[in-house]
Image (cartoon, rainbow, N blue to C red; front, side):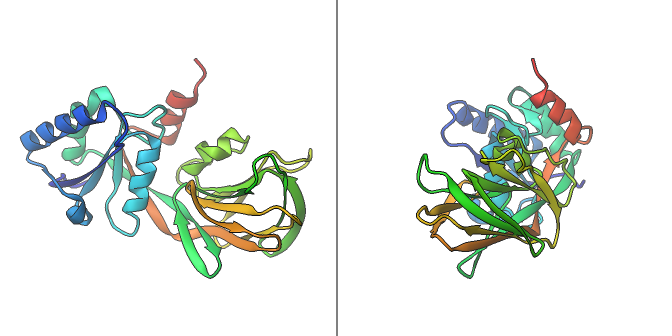
Length: 264
């Protein structure tokens, strides 16, 4: 990749060690001749540097959707699966990045249509019971085929980066970066037969709230959009935009997966 001349900075404002990391970044960028841009100018950046964890990386990927700006993470969070550089290695890792020693991975987004409005997420779209402790009945159709009604706590449609989040904790499969697909996983289904499904592009997942007296909450990337009343529907599919995640050249999905999720 070309060397970096201008960089945007995205931070997790609630992590105590981020303020010192910002000072380290400022000092190192000044020495390397890299300009750090203010937020109003960051669409002109060559790359966005995240100081934080996976949640902050996802926020940055959303912020730079529709631009050519890739996002690279320096881990100051807990898991850091989407980050490429350890917090202790900030200077050595960014020296490589500033020299253009990184590659980008395009990741699909998820799009949810509700009440005539379109909502885009980089992680997942979720339909869940709006009443704590109440099971909800969700009807679902995939690719125009009705697959019945499932009592459950909710349903997740996750992208490859989102597959290692809420989807993974509910027993859904991990999708390797590079797949143009999303996974559909029920949350606590009241059956022995509901299994996660992986679907490709141009396939709609239509979800209907079939409960007679329970509203459903509709969320994208953890943001509550609205409640879905009984009889209400929403449509979820892969979106046209792609987010751009930057990693060091030697890093693959499987090296990160092994480092983060291997027991012990």
